[in-house]
Length: 596
Image 1: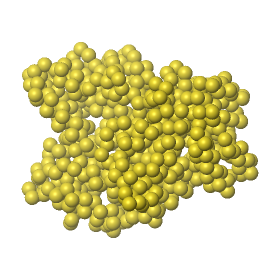
Image 2 (image 1 turned 135 degrees about the vertical axis):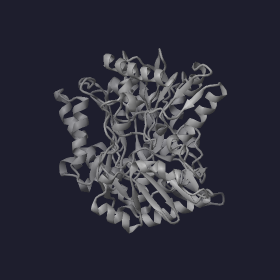
Image 3 (image 1 turned 180 degrees about the vertical axis):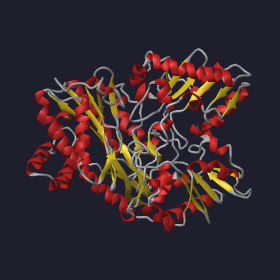
Image 4 (image 1 turned 45 degrees about the vertical axis):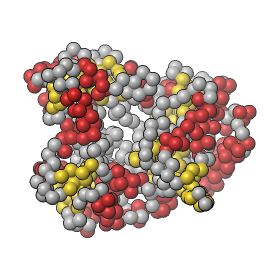
């Protein structure tokens, strides 16, 4: 690894010197700002050696004599390990010791020099801030420096996988209805056309999916243009089957090549007011726009985030299927654990197999996280052949997993004890669950945002001087992607209110490096609670169906209402899953869902 990474760095530095680039910034994403880009765009992983199946959050900076890689707290431990001997040093982008990349770059690039980026892999919004700060200090930004075209000789090609139609009966909305709603949002923004780059938005609007373009998400690489008269899908022709072509013809789509998008936006009539989402649109696209750009577009993401009644009903089916798979998985874990032959990697593979045994499950919704004891403290840990720990002795097993069912996307984390848990483990688990329950029980007025509720999940940890630094909840797509906006529940201010139909995760945690990690996660849907003289009030309803480990609750620090919540939730799990289980499985679940 060390020799290879230094070889790559050497290639890049040579090109930088030839092109007059003093500093090169390398994105971890693609022209669509995807959380998990296809391998074609994973150049930052290739050059740094820092890689993750569950997320590629990392931005690299290469100077003539130094190289750094910024990432967030989910990956601090992993990045520190993977970057050893690569020529890159890890920088923290959040937490108490965070270093702002743009501020750092501005301070470390002398006036008169040039910073180079591949504008197709950075958003308009990010580049605007970077360019402004660099310009204020006399530094030029070159947005047309596709560094990997020069140095990545065996770079993987762009994915060419066939599309398929997602049954509109499952979705509950036709493509025509969605386009009508999108065009209405465009008008609200005082625009008359829109270019959509976000792959989840495109998959949602077109009711099309594919396998393997994006890891764990059935989205497909494309751009989409809409106005009152034209509907243009920019996609590689090899991806279009006869079924898909008929589907697109039905809704009046024109098909153009993926690479045609730059030329298309360059030739739009001057009177076109083109709506672009500055956080999702690549600077390399924006640089070619020949008409009037209008920044906005968050209304499209909000349309997607509010699920139809059909979606919520079908997601309930997906949750039942998921609960069956998880029952069989954890029964297996308990049965085979005493033999001392289980490993993290083996458990990850076994759970994948159990989920995919259901024909409606197309893939996992992310790479399964299985962390035993110390590895559970690595927030986005994935077991590998080198790191996979044997499940032996006493401890905590953290399993974070999910499935992409045609009926919806699931995401669940359970932390269980194997052997005898310590008093400290039970105490910490109960603190995390008290936060989980507090958020689950929240009733809040219309207009409430996620950051206004976030402290409910953290309060019990904070009282003891403990904390976690990831978000408490993220939006979840419907057979699209596991992480979806615009809503979330986290400390950072987000102006998007939580509305009925939004699916969000509830996943507080606690991570003690070198010892153990705890996370407890359900998916919850926002729904109406009551109407009073003060207006509309909302609440959360749990969608996930699987019990929490009863042996880890320290009842002495729980209130009666908290105990009742656990008992009521376990009763719901038992009632919904029992009819789908064998007699042996049902008996196991009966024992796991007994009242506290």
